[in-house]
Image (cartoon, rainbow, N blue to C red; front, side):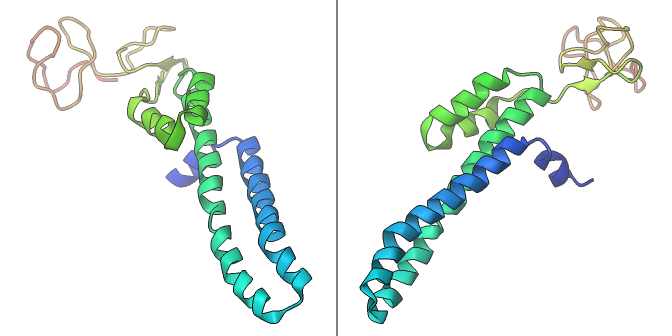
Length: 168
């Protein structure tokens, strides 16, 4: 499964259906506004002038469907990360100009790491599983705080880190 397929699976089926239904409703509305009056006039000149306008108007379906799918992605991704998914979804919907969606991508938490022993999700600040105590990230041998793989010294206590600091 590719990365895109994994991320696409986060979008709920309801958001996909809403995007399809909104796109169809928008297309039907534009057809009713532009195409039906031209057909009622029964003049080829009016019809040929209306079709390009209708086609250009239907391009508006793409941003609307993309916005609905992005709001669905925010909902699914916030749930995966253990964040308040309802709150982030409401912010994505009601903050105008997609600023809520942009804020979500800037402020979202990292994906929790599953414990190799029991499967409990451990957030970024934890080096050990809260359920069973197994190491899920590298930790400083002195203060037991989580450390990043490339660090030479612990950021919490300053102790030098050996090449094999408590491995996850």
